[in-house]
Image 1 (cartoon, rainbow, N blue to C red):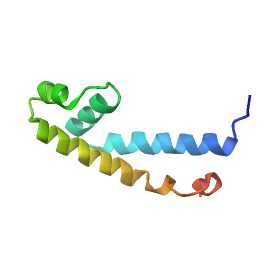
Image 2: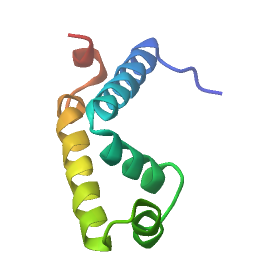
Image 3: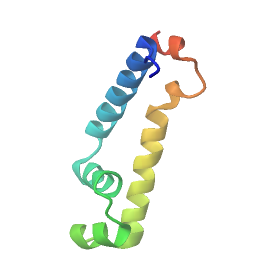
Image 4: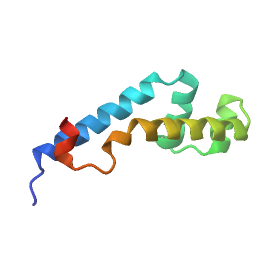
Length: 86
């Protein structure tokens, strides 16, 4: 079994912290929808029904959430593991 690099573990932990911190900053409604879609596996219609919102509004909010998370993770893209510790 291959050993796991300490740098990789640190980088992964930093990324997880970044994700959690970013999601915590979102409004409760956005956070709830994102968690329902990405961690509980609900589809747009199910989230729409549970939130009392139109499917198009749920889709818009989830798109915003995904863009915000993408932006928060920008520093992790295209860099080698060692450079993430800076």
